[in-house]
Each structure stands twice: as structure tokens, then as C-alpha cells.
Image (cartoon, rainbow, N blue to C red; front, side, top):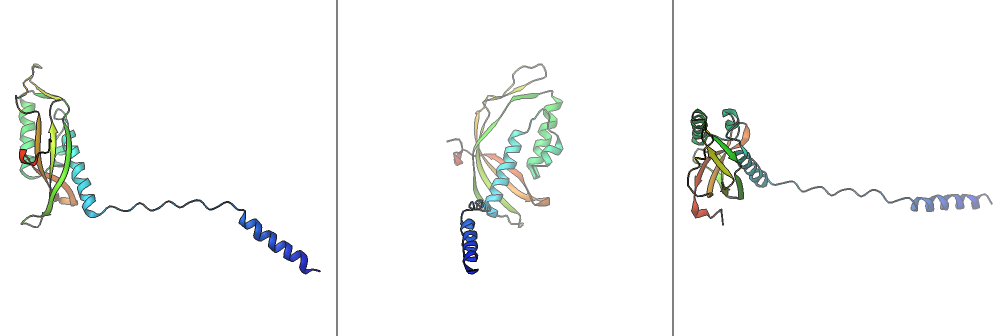
Amino acid sequence: MAAGPLVVLVSSSLLSGCAAPPPEPVPSPVPSLTQEQQDDAAFRDVMTRYVDLDANTDTEEDLAAILTGNLLEDEKSGLATQRQAGQRTVGKEVATGFVVTDRGLDPDGVQYMTAQVCLDLTGTRLLDREGSDITPDTDQRLSLQAKAVVSAGNSWRISDVVRNEDVHACG
């Protein structure tokens, strides 16, 4: 007779185990980005930071963090010239249509990428020392081709930006 209550006890504990709530679902791991996708994102980020610079307040250090080579030197020179002349920029440039179009190693073995981007200047004006509008009468939407290279610290920096209507970045 002692075996009867034991069977009831064992079977009731098994049944109560089935009534427990199901375990919390485990989130699926997010697939990691490939190195190429990470590089593309880094290039897009550095281009966005470049377009977002405020010519009225940026410094040579700000420029050096995202630019390199002749482009860095040209921007430093332009910054100094604009400030000496008392010019300031109002408004904001907008970049759209950023697409990486090429990647590889240059002849010196430096990793590079090129991209096309449309730069819309319609929201910006250049003012002189007295506040008069001296914005050049040029196209307000520029189809650009940009090149970024891996520089010191394995960070991407923009080395070249040229106007290139052949890439049709503005549509």
C-alpha cells in the first residue's frame, strides 16, 4: 500500500512541471555587419560630419579629424581666407544620394573608397562683413564624387571631393 501514494506524489509533481509558464523567448542574434558594410557606414559618417561642419565655428582640428591630404590643406586655407575677410555662412547644406561606387588599394597600398553624393546648397548664403549676400551665382545642386582613405588610427578620412556631373548623383 505504500507504493500507491508515492505514485500519486510523483505523477502530481510531473504534472505540475508541465503547468509552469514557458521560458522567456531568447532574442535572435543580430547578424554582424561585414567589413565592407562597416567601411561603407564609416565613409557615410565621415561625409555627413564634413557636410555638417559649421564654417563659422569649425577649427583646423575639426577639419583634421575628417579630412586628409590636399583637401585638408585647401579647407584650412579657405577657412582662413573666409575669416580674414569677415565672411560668414548662413543656412545648411544637405547631402543626399550617398552611394559607395568603388573600393580598393591605391598604388601605395592604401585602402580607399569612392562615392557619389548630391550636395544641395539652396539653403545656404554667404554674407560679407556687413551682412550683404555675396553668394556666388553658381549651380545650387552639385553632383560630387568623393574619395576616402584609411589614415592613421585606421579611421576613414576624406582625401578628395570633386564635382562630377557624369555620376548623376543629383538625379
